[in-house]
Length: 84
Image 1: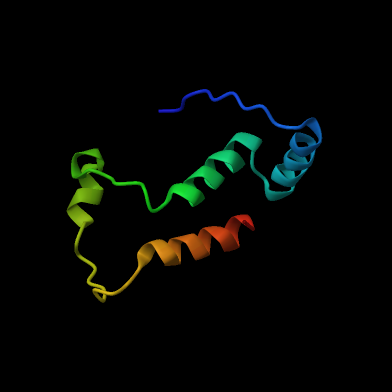
Image 2: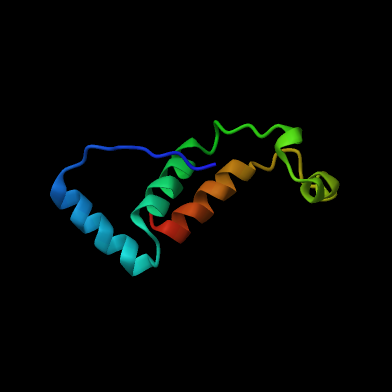
């Protein structure tokens, strides 16, 4: 579910951000949402009942090392993808 958010940001910053988003093929809203996801990735906890039935069925079939830090890998990949 999407919710509207109002931000107060310097006009020049908005103009530059819009250009950047256009170059990346995304809307400014998508770019802001992805940034928020990037900075909050370690805080998000998904409850099993929020997962779709297909994802629930697939959950746990891949075994990884116990010391694997997937949030670090996710953070690196999002950083590469969005240039943050």
